[in-house]
Structures are given as structure tokens and as C-alpha cells.
Length: 224
Length: 81
View (tube, rainbow over the protein chains, first blue to last red):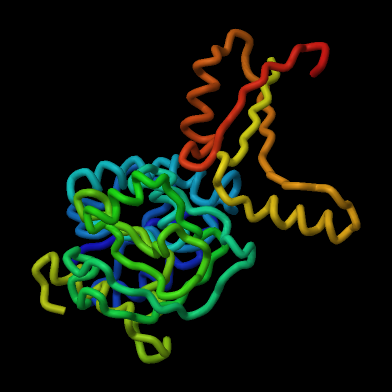
């Protein structure tokens, strides 16, 4: 599987993401700087990592959404390339309108950094194919702006179309309907606040994130 | 030409920052504050002849996230600027 990790000034989970991809897919991803206007040819997956792109100025993800590389990411997403946005990457995807809704300051005001339990609501997507529907998994979160909000109509549509991929079990950050991760309409773009790349190997103490990457391998026809 | 863009959270959207300011005001002994909403003020210095529609587009594309925020554009008279 050929993958790329986008790095913005202020990204800080780009290397964790690259290491997770290397471990699970057996191939190191290309690291792509935000000023690039073209992506490497033949990509199967683009990962947008966590961090504080552009210092979270204006709104989390707002500046990154308008950067040159994001135009290329949008075009790739339209062609069906898989796009995974984690934490700040999820914020960037909503600001870039690749996913609906917005991620606001946590309802409890405080930064939340801990392991959380999330339920896999849809196991049909490439990202969640290696989980069972309804399965509860443990993955760490670390965010200040993870409070997912959208209007009622959008939320109903997401639920109705099975696009709520992951939901928190218990209260974490005030997200509408406990939403932790959502898919785009075509199912090739996933944004989520939990960090699967921090739960892939024994040293992490948690392994539930690994199967997300294994699902992507399977989606491109490679055995995990 | 000076323009002020006021960005505020839409009615009904929870404002954790406003809530924290409210608590802090109460902590300082200010009674009778019913609610606090926090927003942003963005001041632009733009070329003469910049159209309202140009500023509207700036607001929609970057300055405000219209999923959760409203914006109001104010032209500042030169004498006041």
C-alpha cells in the first residue's frame, strides 16, 4: 500500500502516524510538506495527522484547510483515494469541507488526554472492516477542540446513512450524539478524534488501533 | 479602508469560553450577569474600492466557520479609524 502523511507547521503526530503505517503496511509513507501542490503518484492513502497546525490560529484546522497541499488532497479524495484525518487532521477535514460539521472547544473547557472507549457503529467501511459492528475498542484521545457539532438535519443524515463510524461510550467532550468519527458520503474519507496510531504495538500498551490500518491494507487487496 | 469583521457563535451553540468568563465574573463578585458569549473581532485594512461581496467571500471562506458562527461586516469611517 502506498501512503503519504501530510505535515503542516505545528503538526506533531506526523511521525507517530508514519511509524504506524510503516509497521502495519510494511512500507514507509511519503512525508509531504504543506506547501506542496502535488502529491506522489499512485497513492492509496493520505493521512492527515494530529497536532496544532498553524498554531490553531483563527480556528483549529482553519489555516491548514486553505493550504496548497489541501487542494491536492481534495482532488485525490474526489478520485477515491482514502483519506484518514486524526484529531487535528479531523479538524482540517471539516474546515476543508471534506466532512460536514465542526469541532469546537470541549464542552468541559479542559483538554482531554486519556484512553477512551469507542463503539464501532459501522464496520462496512475500509477503515473499520477489521472490527465487528458494535464492538467496543479502547483508543487514546488528546484534544482541546473535539466537541463535534452539526445541525440536526446533518446529524440525522449522518446517522441514517451509517456515516457515524465511531461513537464514544460515555461522555468525553460534549460531542453531539457522542460522535467520535465520521465518514464522507462515498466512504473513502474518515475523520476521528481518537488516535489509532497510538495503539498499534505492544509498547503502546493498547493495540486496538492496529486493525484500522489492517482494514486499509485489505481494501487495497493486500493481506494484513 | 478599514473593515471590522465581528465573528460570533450562532445562537444555541454552546460557548465554553463564554461560560468560563461568566464563572470568573461571578468569582470576582459581579452579580446580575445573566449570560456571557465570547466572539472575535478581526480588523482588515483593504484597498479602496473593495466590494462588500469580496469581504463576504473572505468571511465565508476563512474568517468564520458558518457551521457554528455568524459574521457581521462593519465599514469603519476614516475619521473613526
